Image 1 (tube, rainbow, N blue to C red):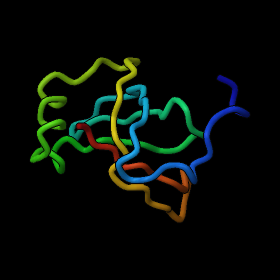
Image 2 (spheres, rainbow, N blue to C red):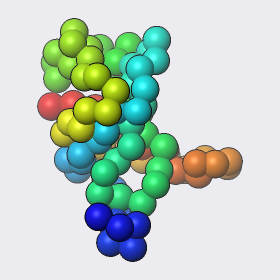
Image 3 (cartoon, helix red, strand yellow):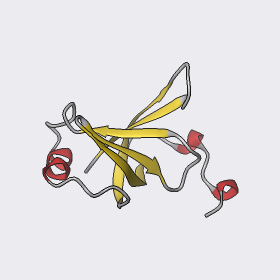
Image 4 (cartoon, rainbow, N blue to C red):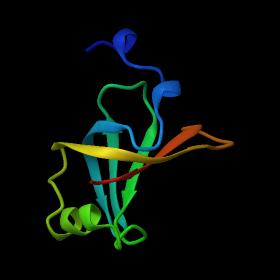
Amino acid sequence: MTDESKRPLSELHPGEPVRATITSHQPWGITAELRDYEPVGASLDTIRRSGEPGVRRLAQDLPPVGTTVELVVGRVSSWDYAPWIWVDLTSN
């Protein structure tokens, strides 16, 4: 999929399922790239969201870097610096 055919960030809403490719493991969770959208910062904080059953299952066996998984948009936040938009992810 070329950048021109990626979905705009305005279509990201809480509860929206997204395909996310894991880009790194962090002490607090994972960072990811959203496959079908314009470039944006994205992460899943497995510590903060540890009470959610889907996140708890995911945290027990984190997918390897490079793996694409289906996650869910938890919150979309705008920032005053790059990457300007950050997507807080969660899991079902």
